[in-house]
Length: 436
Image (tube, rainbow, N blue to C red):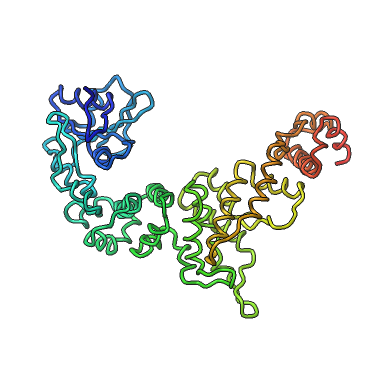
């Protein structure tokens, strides 16, 4: 019969790794999120094993499996694309440490549980099951000691609270508030990844506001706080900051969309000017796109994500209310790209809903989307690769050398084809070359 933790089936590979460790005289316990999620009835995504074996011995025992070390004291074993982390017990002397000592150094009580492979029982020295029943996030032992070990745990407390709908224990939350500035000790890559998990939760504004209250947000994205309590014009019920929070909550949980919502008005405080008694925000989309790029570079997002997000922010004020021609819509498609045009529509819809004046009719956006659907179905040429001629044709026709000039000519041809798609035939484009 397949072994289980609270009705959750343990994968054969996890049992194989654990049983081999035990057969070699080592300890083996399933720990952390796997135990927590099985008790909560969630699908277990990560299976981690704790042992008293050293990383060197783990690698030696599993010489026949691909392995790598990304975290201190942890060996990640790879089997058919699945990763299994095997970690040496935490403690002053890991070789002599026990599972109880290991659990005492974990972040929160609901994560400080283990499953004993031999005894087939849950080891729960810190009452993690009780915290799950009470729906509370509580640090193991002294919160300040746990956060000193890894300040990122402060963000993890907020993330778990958000994902599970649990409250943070007052003593734990007080430590987060007192130590919030210590987040600067953590690498920006780890902060970025944890921030994204908060941003893609069901209602991210709750987590972002908690980050603001405990002083962490000002260390990560201080620019966002520039809009706090900054009023807008009559078109908006809420302040700049509140409007951004509302937009994030309304938009789908796609991380690209959530980031775009986070940044879409971020530069408004910097361009905010009162003209004839009313606040105006001229060119805020362009300024917000530039500021978004600076922040994303600082947080070491990929160039691909930076390009997509800044493009959505730059174009989020696109005109969809006028009777736009197919030509105008093709130009917008070229700027944004077919892959992101629907994200742009979703962002604008959320932006409109976040103005705060009650229900917003989305009929005009729906009509615009129908026009996009019809055009996309025709597969209009939007990139130089869609043209019926290529760089070699231009080189041979014009008798010029390869270089930037060829690219400029292709771009000019593409602009002509976007204006008139019927031009995208080889003979017509070759004739057009003579006109350029």
